[in-house]
Length: 120
Image 1 (tube, rainbow, N blue to C red):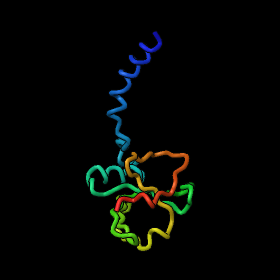
Image 2: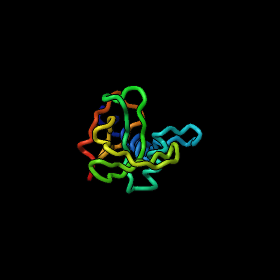
Image 3: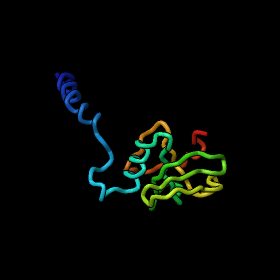
Image 4: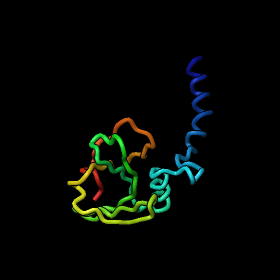
């Protein structure tokens, strides 16, 4: 009997969650997360990365879009500031969490540096 109710609730909730858009409707309230996801949706050749100066991504972290250029260069697109720039020697500077085969989460307790997983 409990299984029947569980399946009924799941079927009612699933369509709503499948259509959930994580980008806020109010563009005035957008953060770097919203800008990076929106840019990525409209430009699928760009990935999403979270950059931080803290190895545990505590404090100020920043979501931007990227294109891998080489082991030494990343092209960064920051829609928040409407700028593009190259980061030279990126593998030795700061910490990066590349969202590869995972969906970026707006709020996280911890993230790990996965610069070795970047698609080349």
